[in-house]
Image (tube, rainbow, N blue to C red):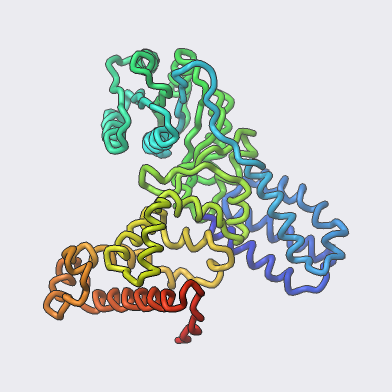
Length: 441
């Protein structure tokens, strides 16, 4: 996400870093470039204009013009303004009042509302809530089936409609949750290709019938400026308490994320960063600002690792590393964890300074999948004892995984290198080994 904006801003700040001191003309030129970068990222022109207007007096201050490191000082001010534009501090969905708490999910058709409803239900379940999903999109039977399938996958009950009146269905959902002791009701409402009076009237009827604690607007991050207009309309017509951005992982520009907070005054609470049910994260304005400016997101990366690798598993893996007993089963488990954490490009972008040095051509997203296919085509005995892998078995594995013998050999060489490093660490008795210099090709 934000690749285009990140690259444009990086070039601007690199030019500033090359100067000893900055003049007012340098600042004005940089501000013009920042504004162009925002507009190219599909940020609404009024938001881009106001952002630059707030930034200009800060950059014209003496701490910038007289700084010995003006590039870093400018970067600091831009980071703070970006964080403020994105919402300032992290805010969380607040479920107050008597149970069951009611969350009304709003949005246009195709925004990813039904999928996000299931993701939010899974997240609430992981936070020790007992949610119920209620299907109130009565115009599209496919949406009801989709919610039912997703609910079954994550282990959350789904109430199918037993009436043609969405408000009655929503009320029945609350009654069912109360009777079953479920403490959160997530209501998936209908959408349209665009905002229309009929949709707004239906949503107001549901809202008035259930009095939700939270009205959450789901926006497709890839729609750019259109998301801002949609958000303004829902905020004015229905009223919203927060925003969830779907498909944020697929948006290279990021205009929606940078515009909707300014348009509505409501916080972005969640960001969907992948297709799997667990890939919904709280939205952190400070971390997002850092990532936009190429400063990485170490905390976000650590949190993703902790979700996929338990403390017990990490301790067991560390113990095997110390003993030099790493197997292909360990490698397969690590690759599966990496795959669940997100795309390689996104993970690399969370490491400070690394994403700038790695080009798109250096990131082969499909390599993890190929390696997993190879490992899964082996028997458990072969993964535990790779010495069994003679030429005949390697040909069988390549055929079974849809790869080549060369791919199998490459993976085994990587595994042998990992084992060699593990043994080297064991031989150093707790001290880190001296890493050899990287080969230049």
